[in-house]
Length: 423
Image (cartoon, rainbow, N blue to C red; front, side):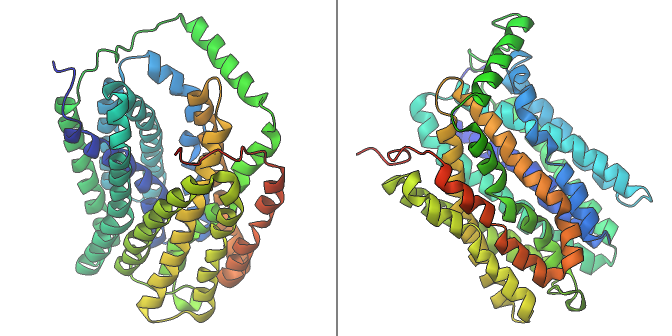
């Protein structure tokens, strides 16, 4: 039983496996339900509820630390995720596909959120400080590759199967069977290749009562931080526009022109948003990280807050002009996604900044719970708002949604030096 292994043998596959189910739950489900004929209201409501496991993840994260080992949690959750994908694949051709597939998506969402906790903890246990620094970019890269695979390649595959077979449910069943097989392979590989760090014991250092007391202290110290009210409002509102837009992007690309959409095929939508868009998003995040390290969060928060929303005007222009040239569609999607990647940097830096101090790991987890809640609640009503307003007015509404964030920014207290690279 090896306590160490070459990190290259497991970090790329582990973080690819971490990213893929999240994309499946948040994005692939939206496209699939759209192709199955659900309304935008139904799609946004049902898929937004799937954010809940990530919202409440901080509640059960302490128990992942004390029950079993993180290695055990990783391989067990990968097996459950594979079972969830298989369950969706089996039930899509049935009359009760909606209820059954949503149940399996819920299973995957909880399994994926738990897998996130275990994988990130295992990363810190299995690597020393220098290795953690070296591989942080590698893990991020493979997480992004999972996004491209899920939002792009798998949706393109499903579109190809739709066209070649003429059977939508069969096409998506095959797609989810492929995902199930992939996660069975991940389970087998990681069961063999993951090291057994000596510190990954899974033994309780304290009694369950001690754990509950410490958990209560963590919650108390978080909610008594200075400026907590403004900070929580900022966490909930910074992604307000994106939370609604992301639920309607694929429906807008797929809806017919008579409905106000662009009438793209499933394959073309996967190329535009799932490949070109994700690449632009990644580039925006890289550029955002570079510039933020030079002058810090306080300097960049205003430009980044504007950048995360104003490029949404690209979707407004698409809705107004409905261009037939696919190049314009790709350019608009890339513009919006680059702006989102760039502007999201300030949000993540703020979460890190606000988590500083005692219990910073747990406090960061709570912050990410508010981040997920800020995506879940607006997303639930996004479809209904779009159906009431139409696409053009909906995208105008999206652009206006930046105002609450801009009102909050002057009240944020941020250290001028935070985020700057040390010389």
